[in-house]
View 1 (cartoon, one colour):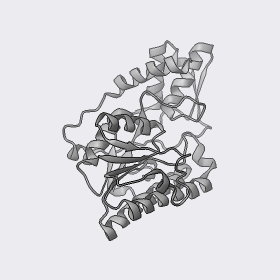
View 2: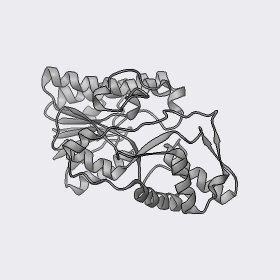
View 3: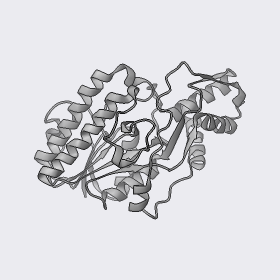
View 4: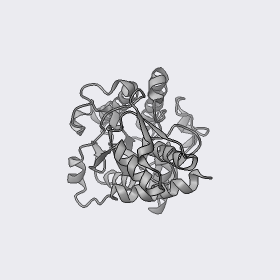
Length: 303
C-alpha cells in the first residue's frame, strides 16, 4: 500500500513509520519544512500521486500546562492543520482512508470515557480548546463521510509511553517527567517535588501496542471512533513508588505540591468497543513495559 503520514517525526509517528516499513508499505512522511500544514495546499508539493491510506498524526500541542497558556494559538493552528489535511483528502485523495488521532481530554471529566460520549459535555477547562479542536476533527471526518462517502477511522489513545521519547528539553508527558525528576532526585540526593496530591490517576499504553492495535483497526474498521487503552489505571503515587524502587530512590523523600497544575483526576478509557473489534488483542502489562522503558530512559537521559 502507498501511505501518507503527517506528524511522522513525533514520538508516535516514529513508531508508526517503523511498523509500516516492516509491513513493506511505500511511505511518504513529509516534515514541517517540506509541508507546513498551516498553509493551504502545502501537501500538494510534498505528497504526489495516489494514496491508499492517510495517517493524520500532526497536531500543535505539548504536554504539561502548555494548553493553559496557548488556547488561542492552539485553536487557530490546529484548525488550520486539520482543515488543510481534510481538504487535501477530500479534493485530492478521496479514495484513501484517513486515520486520525483523537485525545482523551475530549471527554467530559467525571463521566465514563466511552466513545458515544466523545462529543457530549465539555472537556476539562485546562484542555478545553485542544479538546474541541479534536472534536471538530471528528465532526469533519463524519461530515465528509456523510456527504461524499469517504472512509475514516479516529482512534483515541490513553497516554503513550515507550522507548524513543524526546529528550530535547520540551515538556514531557507525566510518566517521563516522573522518570526525570526521580532520577535527578537520586543522583543529586534531593527531594522530588511532584505536582498535585499524587492521587490523580492515569492510564498508560505502550506505544508499540497502540500502533499494532491502530493498524489492525485501520485494515478492518471503517467510519468509527475507537478508544485504545490498556484498561488499567494507577495513581501518580503508584507510578512514582515503582520508579523509585527500580532506581533505589527513597519514595518517602517525594513531596506533593497540591498548589500546582494537576489536570484531570482520571483519564481512564472504556475499551469495551476495542475488545469487541479485536477480541484476541494482547497488551504488554504496564509494570513490564514501564520497567523496560525506564531502563531505556536511564541510559539515554544520562547522556
